Image 1 (cartoon, one colour):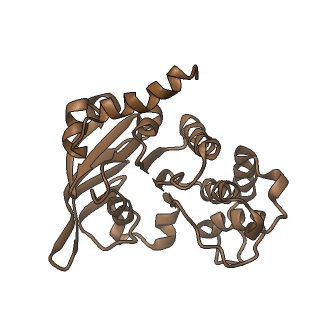
Image 2 (cartoon, one colour):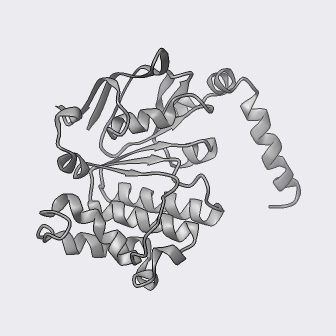
Image 3 (cartoon, helix red, strand yellow):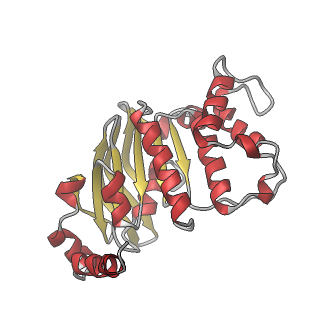
Length: 255
Protein backbone atom coordinates (compact mmCIF):
# COMPACT_ATOMS: atom_id res chain seq x y z
CA UNK A 1 0.00 0.00 0.00
CA UNK A 2 2.64 2.55 1.06
CA UNK A 3 6.29 2.57 0.06
CA UNK A 4 8.69 5.11 1.55
CA UNK A 5 12.05 5.45 -0.17
CA UNK A 6 15.00 7.45 1.18
CA UNK A 7 12.74 9.90 3.04
CA UNK A 8 14.88 12.84 4.16
CA UNK A 9 13.95 15.99 6.05
CA UNK A 10 16.39 18.84 6.58
CA UNK A 11 16.08 22.19 8.31
CA UNK A 12 18.96 24.22 7.00
CA UNK A 13 22.10 22.16 7.62
CA UNK A 14 20.38 20.00 10.26
CA UNK A 15 19.16 16.58 9.09
CA UNK A 16 16.10 15.48 11.08
CA UNK A 17 15.24 12.35 9.08
CA UNK A 18 18.01 10.64 7.17
CA UNK A 19 17.13 8.36 4.23
CA UNK A 20 14.36 6.43 5.92
CA UNK A 21 12.83 3.59 3.88
CA UNK A 22 10.03 1.16 4.74
CA UNK A 23 6.74 -0.20 3.42
CA UNK A 24 3.29 -0.90 4.84
CA UNK A 25 0.85 -3.47 3.51
CA UNK A 26 -2.91 -3.70 3.96
CA UNK A 27 -3.88 -5.25 7.28
CA UNK A 28 -0.68 -4.09 9.00
CA UNK A 29 -0.36 -1.77 11.97
CA UNK A 30 3.10 -0.23 11.91
CA UNK A 31 4.31 1.24 15.21
CA UNK A 32 6.99 3.92 14.84
CA UNK A 33 8.97 3.95 18.09
CA UNK A 34 12.12 5.49 19.46
CA UNK A 35 13.32 8.12 21.94
CA UNK A 36 12.55 11.83 21.79
CA UNK A 37 14.28 13.46 18.84
CA UNK A 38 14.36 10.24 16.82
CA UNK A 39 12.34 11.82 14.00
CA UNK A 40 9.16 9.78 14.45
CA UNK A 41 6.60 12.59 14.15
CA UNK A 42 8.62 14.17 11.35
CA UNK A 43 8.27 10.96 9.34
CA UNK A 44 4.50 11.03 9.92
CA UNK A 45 4.33 14.67 8.82
CA UNK A 46 6.39 14.02 5.71
CA UNK A 47 4.15 11.12 4.65
CA UNK A 48 1.03 13.22 5.13
CA UNK A 49 2.67 16.04 3.13
CA UNK A 50 2.58 18.60 5.95
CA UNK A 51 6.38 18.70 6.16
CA UNK A 52 8.59 19.25 3.08
CA UNK A 53 10.86 16.29 2.42
CA UNK A 54 13.16 14.61 -0.03
CA UNK A 55 12.95 11.04 -1.24
CA UNK A 56 9.77 9.44 -2.46
CA UNK A 57 6.50 8.26 -0.92
CA UNK A 58 4.35 5.99 -3.08
CA UNK A 59 0.74 5.08 -2.37
CA UNK A 60 -0.34 2.07 -4.43
CA UNK A 61 2.57 2.89 -6.73
CA UNK A 62 1.68 6.57 -7.16
CA UNK A 63 3.86 9.43 -5.98
CA UNK A 64 1.76 11.23 -3.35
CA UNK A 65 3.56 14.52 -3.99
CA UNK A 66 1.82 14.57 -7.38
CA UNK A 67 -1.65 13.95 -5.94
CA UNK A 68 -4.09 16.79 -5.34
CA UNK A 69 -4.85 17.48 -1.69
CA UNK A 70 -8.45 16.34 -2.00
CA UNK A 71 -7.41 13.10 -3.68
CA UNK A 72 -4.78 12.44 -1.03
CA UNK A 73 -7.33 13.02 1.74
CA UNK A 74 -9.51 10.27 0.28
CA UNK A 75 -6.67 7.82 0.81
CA UNK A 76 -4.76 8.99 3.88
CA UNK A 77 -6.23 10.27 7.15
CA UNK A 78 -4.26 11.79 10.02
CA UNK A 79 -5.05 11.95 13.75
CA UNK A 80 -2.73 14.03 15.94
CA UNK A 81 -2.45 14.17 19.73
CA UNK A 82 -4.13 17.54 20.16
CA UNK A 83 -6.58 19.77 18.33
CA UNK A 84 -7.12 23.50 18.54
CA UNK A 85 -10.85 24.08 18.76
CA UNK A 86 -11.84 27.75 18.60
CA UNK A 87 -15.32 27.39 17.20
CA UNK A 88 -18.66 26.23 18.58
CA UNK A 89 -19.45 23.52 16.05
CA UNK A 90 -21.43 20.58 17.33
CA UNK A 91 -19.90 17.14 17.54
CA UNK A 92 -21.98 16.03 14.57
CA UNK A 93 -20.84 18.98 12.44
CA UNK A 94 -17.19 18.21 13.16
CA UNK A 95 -17.69 14.55 12.23
CA UNK A 96 -19.43 15.50 8.98
CA UNK A 97 -16.43 17.60 7.96
CA UNK A 98 -14.71 14.28 7.37
CA UNK A 99 -16.69 14.00 4.12
CA UNK A 100 -15.26 17.24 2.74
CA UNK A 101 -12.75 15.45 0.50
CA UNK A 102 -15.61 13.51 -1.10
CA UNK A 103 -17.90 16.49 -1.71
CA UNK A 104 -18.03 19.29 -4.24
CA UNK A 105 -16.78 21.91 -1.80
CA UNK A 106 -17.59 22.67 1.83
CA UNK A 107 -21.32 23.16 1.23
CA UNK A 108 -21.61 20.70 -1.62
CA UNK A 109 -23.41 17.40 -1.50
CA UNK A 110 -21.44 14.38 -0.34
CA UNK A 111 -20.95 11.34 -2.52
CA UNK A 112 -23.64 8.67 -2.60
CA UNK A 113 -22.55 6.72 0.48
CA UNK A 114 -21.45 9.76 2.49
CA UNK A 115 -24.33 9.62 4.96
CA UNK A 116 -23.76 5.92 5.51
CA UNK A 117 -20.08 6.54 6.28
CA UNK A 118 -20.94 9.32 8.75
CA UNK A 119 -23.51 7.22 10.59
CA UNK A 120 -21.16 4.23 10.70
CA UNK A 121 -18.41 6.41 12.21
CA UNK A 122 -20.82 7.76 14.85
CA UNK A 123 -21.98 4.28 15.81
CA UNK A 124 -18.47 2.86 15.91
CA UNK A 125 -17.22 5.59 18.25
CA UNK A 126 -20.37 5.67 20.39
CA UNK A 127 -20.86 9.41 20.05
CA UNK A 128 -24.66 9.44 19.68
CA UNK A 129 -25.21 11.17 23.06
CA UNK A 130 -22.89 14.05 22.12
CA UNK A 131 -24.01 14.86 18.57
CA UNK A 132 -25.78 18.14 19.36
CA UNK A 133 -23.24 19.18 21.99
CA UNK A 134 -20.67 21.90 21.24
CA UNK A 135 -17.17 20.50 20.91
CA UNK A 136 -16.05 23.32 23.21
CA UNK A 137 -17.75 21.47 26.08
CA UNK A 138 -16.23 18.04 25.44
CA UNK A 139 -13.55 16.44 27.60
CA UNK A 140 -10.17 15.69 26.07
CA UNK A 141 -11.06 12.05 25.50
CA UNK A 142 -14.46 12.86 24.01
CA UNK A 143 -12.88 15.43 21.70
CA UNK A 144 -10.27 12.96 20.50
CA UNK A 145 -13.01 10.40 19.89
CA UNK A 146 -14.86 13.04 17.84
CA UNK A 147 -11.86 13.64 15.60
CA UNK A 148 -11.36 9.89 15.28
CA UNK A 149 -14.99 9.65 14.11
CA UNK A 150 -14.29 12.45 11.62
CA UNK A 151 -11.33 10.43 10.37
CA UNK A 152 -13.41 7.26 10.01
CA UNK A 153 -16.15 9.20 8.18
CA UNK A 154 -13.43 10.39 5.81
CA UNK A 155 -13.01 6.69 4.96
CA UNK A 156 -9.29 6.69 4.11
CA UNK A 157 -7.36 3.54 3.32
CA UNK A 158 -4.41 4.47 5.54
CA UNK A 159 -4.57 5.98 9.03
CA UNK A 160 -1.60 7.94 10.38
CA UNK A 161 -1.81 8.40 14.15
CA UNK A 162 0.74 10.76 15.66
CA UNK A 163 0.74 10.01 19.40
CA UNK A 164 -3.08 10.13 19.45
CA UNK A 165 -3.43 9.20 23.15
CA UNK A 166 -0.38 10.96 24.56
CA UNK A 167 -2.41 13.32 26.78
CA UNK A 168 -5.32 10.99 27.54
CA UNK A 169 -5.98 8.89 30.63
CA UNK A 170 -5.92 5.08 30.59
CA UNK A 171 -9.62 4.66 29.75
CA UNK A 172 -9.42 6.82 26.64
CA UNK A 173 -6.08 5.33 25.58
CA UNK A 174 -7.67 1.89 25.59
CA UNK A 175 -10.77 3.19 23.85
CA UNK A 176 -8.96 4.90 20.97
CA UNK A 177 -6.62 1.98 20.27
CA UNK A 178 -9.45 -0.54 20.52
CA UNK A 179 -11.51 1.45 17.99
CA UNK A 180 -8.59 1.60 15.57
CA UNK A 181 -7.98 -2.13 16.00
CA UNK A 182 -11.65 -2.80 15.25
CA UNK A 183 -11.45 -0.64 12.10
CA UNK A 184 -8.34 -2.50 10.97
CA UNK A 185 -9.83 -5.94 11.66
CA UNK A 186 -12.90 -4.98 9.62
CA UNK A 187 -10.69 -4.54 6.57
CA UNK A 188 -10.16 -0.80 6.91
CA UNK A 189 -6.72 -0.80 5.32
CA UNK A 190 -3.51 -0.09 7.26
CA UNK A 191 -2.31 2.01 10.19
CA UNK A 192 0.91 3.85 11.02
CA UNK A 193 1.19 5.00 14.64
CA UNK A 194 3.84 7.14 16.28
CA UNK A 195 3.95 6.02 19.92
CA UNK A 196 6.13 6.49 22.98
CA UNK A 197 4.57 3.69 25.01
CA UNK A 198 6.32 0.46 24.07
CA UNK A 199 3.58 -1.56 25.79
CA UNK A 200 0.98 -0.11 23.41
CA UNK A 201 3.27 -0.83 20.47
CA UNK A 202 3.66 -4.44 21.55
CA UNK A 203 -0.03 -4.92 22.36
CA UNK A 204 -1.55 -3.48 19.18
CA UNK A 205 1.13 -3.40 16.49
CA UNK A 206 1.81 -6.06 13.90
CA UNK A 207 5.02 -4.40 12.71
CA UNK A 208 7.43 -1.83 14.08
CA UNK A 209 9.94 0.74 12.88
CA UNK A 210 12.59 1.55 15.49
CA UNK A 211 14.27 4.92 14.97
CA UNK A 212 17.12 6.81 16.57
CA UNK A 213 18.68 10.13 15.56
CA UNK A 214 16.64 10.30 12.37
CA UNK A 215 17.60 6.88 11.11
CA UNK A 216 16.05 3.42 11.03
CA UNK A 217 17.65 1.05 13.52
CA UNK A 218 15.39 -1.93 12.85
CA UNK A 219 12.15 -2.79 11.08
CA UNK A 220 10.01 -5.90 10.79
CA UNK A 221 7.39 -7.60 12.91
CA UNK A 222 6.94 -6.33 16.46
CA UNK A 223 8.62 -9.46 17.84
CA UNK A 224 11.59 -8.99 15.53
CA UNK A 225 12.09 -5.31 16.31
CA UNK A 226 11.26 -4.86 20.00
CA UNK A 227 14.14 -7.00 21.24
CA UNK A 228 16.08 -6.10 24.42
CA UNK A 229 19.42 -5.63 22.69
CA UNK A 230 17.93 -3.22 20.16
CA UNK A 231 15.83 -1.25 22.64
CA UNK A 232 18.68 -0.97 25.14
CA UNK A 233 21.00 0.43 22.50
CA UNK A 234 18.49 3.03 21.29
CA UNK A 235 17.25 4.15 24.71
CA UNK A 236 20.69 3.78 26.32
CA UNK A 237 19.29 1.96 29.32
CA UNK A 238 18.08 -1.49 30.33
CA UNK A 239 14.51 -1.14 29.07
CA UNK A 240 13.43 -4.58 30.24
CA UNK A 241 14.66 -4.05 33.79
CA UNK A 242 12.89 -0.68 33.93
CA UNK A 243 9.60 -2.13 32.67
CA UNK A 244 9.75 -5.13 35.00
CA UNK A 245 10.47 -2.84 37.94
CA UNK A 246 7.41 -0.74 37.16
CA UNK A 247 5.06 -3.69 36.85
CA UNK A 248 6.53 -5.54 39.85
CA UNK A 249 5.13 -2.89 42.13
CA UNK A 250 1.62 -3.57 40.85
CA UNK A 251 2.07 -7.34 41.06
CA UNK A 252 3.21 -7.03 44.66
CA UNK A 253 -0.01 -5.15 45.43
CA UNK A 254 -2.04 -7.98 43.92
CA UNK A 255 -3.11 -6.17 40.75
